[in-house]
Length: 227
Image (cartoon, rainbow, N blue to C red):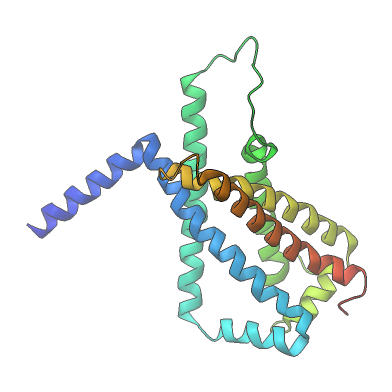
């Protein structure tokens, strides 16, 4: 009986995910997890302003989690994969619904963030891959030292090209987060004329905080504020 109930539950879940609503809910759920991670990751990185000892101690605490850290990484990787898959499938469904483009496209009131979601997402993904190679594994770093995160950040951002790439990518990330943060509420049915404007304002503040916090670090290194 337990096996039958489990199989029935899996079938219902799969059927729900195959629907447009299911894919939007999946995007919202995984997006929420990733938004929380981005905020926590930024707060951890901002400890660079407290000096090398503070930042390296924080990094050592994370590494000390061992299997727990890898479990978190796998969850985040799964969320990224499901988020991208859901976005791609929704995009394909949209194309299939109208395979022939409009002869005359009417201008619809929408935000710049919403219009750029389709290409800002892949760029942010490319940035994440480079970020891992740059500061986690070290293959893309000019002078990588295991365990010395402070040195790796300063040495990495002393390269103007790398810093400019980070700045541009984090601006796009903030734009992506702004639209994604408030639209995920719509995806799960939280939409009302009274509080939707407040959700948009909250999403804008969140995106500004993430963008400003992340961009400040390469700028601080380039200007000599962090040495």
